[in-house]
Amino acid sequence: MFPRIYPLVQKEGEDKNALQEIAPETVSKAADTVLGSLDNIWENFLAHTPYMIAGLMVLLFTGVVVFVMRRFGRHFFRRTTSRKSLQDLLVRLLTIATWILGLLFAAMVLIPGLTPAKMLGAVGLFSVAVGFAFKDIFENFFAGILILWHFPFEEGDVIECEDIVGRVESVEVRNTTIRRVTGELVIVPNLFLFKNPCHILTNRRKRRTSVVAGIAYSEDVNTAVKVIKEAVSVCKTVRDDEPLQVFPAGFGESSINIEVTWWTGSTPFAMRESHGEVVAAIKYALDEAGIEIPFPYRTLTFKEPLRVKGEGP
Image (tube, rainbow, N blue to C red; front, side):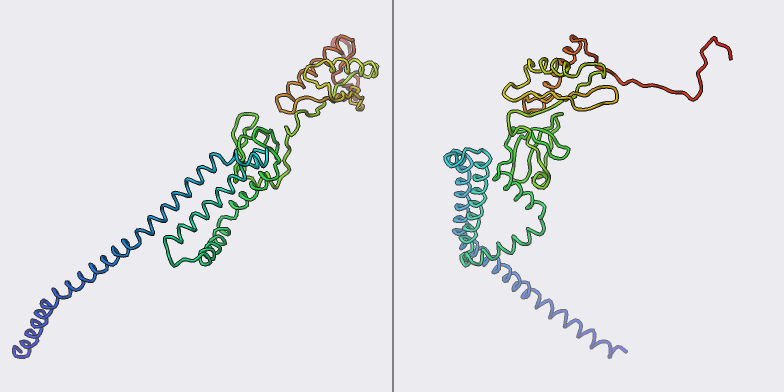
């Protein structure tokens, strides 16, 4: 048994010695390869350093140009249009275009082999992919551009869209900020305002409103109309450059209804203030004239006669 095992043991020992002789050489070659790769990377980095510095200079110059446009762009476009929203839109679009051109030029400087055609092709494919991924954002973006371009409302206008009523604080490219009349701040996507009917309450400085007053059936309608018209015409919040209209409107359950229509300020506060003044004036005038403002009358009919307390059966 020993003569058979001994050669195997001897051969295994020879392999270990061979591996011990080869290992230092292999490690040395691997280290040389890694160091060579690092040297190549460092040399390539140093070789591209001027291109990187030039690209950073391009980006810095683009940032300076954008800063100047944001600072003085509105004054420049003021000669073209007096609309503040259109001025802001032109400045935003010019800023976006400047950044796109600056980034493209910086990429071409950083990568010398990159041509404008290749760059535009890559940007086109990238924009398609981003467009599908961020569809809602781009829809709001383009809706904001259309809102700013067509000038439906400005900052400070009071608008009503669905259940949102408030004053516009800012119109951005993607969102519109609205301060409700109750004080809450609402961030509304521009696509919501673009797709739904939007009422601009302060598009003009005046709005028409109305209220219905009731008089008893026993009163003279013409006299009541004259009294109401005289009372409303002297109210401070009622505009005198538009006609005041007072007409009998119909037959109510307990009264003859008289519709009073007048013009006042366009803001919600002006409307509420004017309503309060007109209602108070009508009530005072009708009381002074002795004209009854009725409340609902009800006649109750019972199937059987009611027994009065103290009477017999």
